[in-house]
Length: 406
Image (cartoon, rainbow, N blue to C red; front, side, top):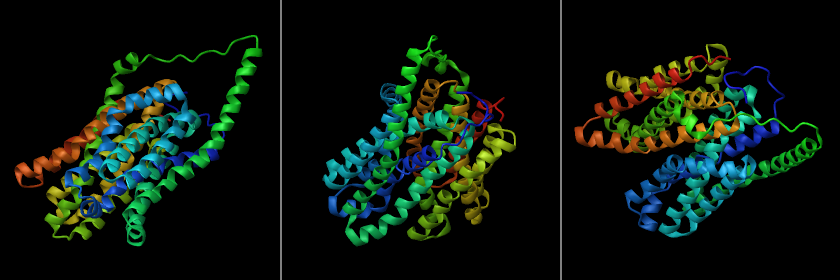
């Protein structure tokens, strides 16, 4: 793996690209869909608001705390088998959550969260291995697929609940990992055949293959860029999950919207992430590299907290700009993860470290913003906290990407 460049592009692997996008569809939608059936979970299962909140918080907590374990699983099983384990775990989690009452809902969510954590960590490894010359572009497409998966499940679950009930509606999303597995199984077999052939050829050759130099985990941990990227992603994740949780409430209270209107209005924040996901590779490739991408993302991100403080009537503009920014920030962080990694092992280690810190802090976003709102009775303090978080993304991301150019 070559860090810091996208030159010398190999032939584009279309089947692997399609399989990666199908895999990405399974990594967010199956757990965020719970937000569409909170009423049914409360009335039919008697779940409290705290328990329902746990169904959406638990996976994110897994993303942070279980990332080192996911890295170890990938090291032991390899990339392809780790993808299949992730898909199988997501499938089982979706089904268990739908049929087991409250214990099943919690257990299924935990299984799903652990499985998706493996997927989160292995995805940058796949991008670095199979799309080395196009990592920024493929990371953008992968990020867009994460958002598309979320939008598909959120928009389609309501009609499914009306037609078939909430249990079948939630279980129906087991189709996503099944479709992704159908794409990955043939790829896994072909790669296994290539690896076996390479081993035979290397055994028959006069010279053994040269082992790529790979830094130890302790070396990766000592690099300043590791912690810069971790802080940058923590700022991104804190702001994203905090504002995703509270933006509908803020719009309802400050703009006089109904719950449905506020939910629809806040969807602008999610939809515009697609623009950031697809636009960031262009910035990285043509306008100065990841450093420029972090600066642009940071400036746009600041639009939501500062805009809502000083020009709240333009909430649609600020939501759109910050939506672009949150997609851009994710792409920028994980493009730099790939570029800063000299080998697949370093990619896996760095990805796990960044996600451990970022997603652990992300769990605090909704809690901290909600606590600040309760203690102050207004939205100024929560918005300022979000502003500080996105400044961390911009500053630390820019520092981590110094010297990286196409």
